Length: 327
Image (tube, rainbow, N blue to C red):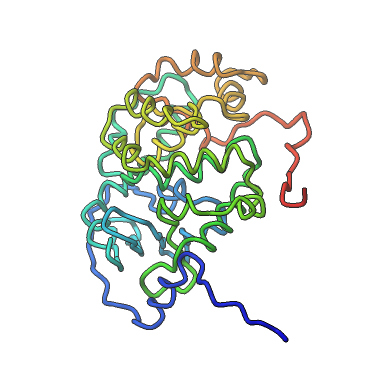
């Protein structure tokens, strides 16, 4: 005789069903006057975690973004006039008003590119060619921190896959009309993910433990959004498993900090060194020395160097893609 097991909904299931039954509520709207040459897609692209990010979509001329705010889940649809004289946003969900209030910050209104002073021909030319570059500020630390932890010491392919699987399974359908957009899990849901599900997503125990520790202290970590860079870096690194690389990658997005330079990256020092001097084996110390004249704007300098598109030829095999789910 076959015994049917009782149905136990996954985290986020109730939210998805409620979304389907209740339909789509009316969107709130807001517009923002953009500076000259503003580049909406390039500026917000740093918030996307891979081409199949369940929280971020670019479709036609619109950027769709699903997020979990202090007021609740929200979806933003952002478009820009061509040429970008104005940016228009529609928002759905309990956190929609929170998102619209902070829309200018998200789009880079708090950023001041005029503070950047080029010290190399390459950065001068990149700064001239990309006048619309603005650093976004989400004001959401955990949203930037968790995927950054997942990206530690693995290929981007592995990290993006883990983010996609975990968000789709333990998050919830985003409010609004988009049918394939998800909001990341709330902190308690991250803590409840079973060890085998982390393993199935290809996340080792060190990274999963760091995510859980961060989720357990989410309110304290969220306070970093209003701190100066040094204090915010210290706050995030109090969590075991979060080092300078992860903290900088987080604060670049949550705080839009122009000086949050990524240290400990496999590729960035070599690209910076090669772009500015032609040297192929620059390390972190060499990168910090080269970017010392840009103190206060080192992250922006690195962004401009990357946009210049110069990189040393690859002389070693690509980092192998692992699959711990098969172990």
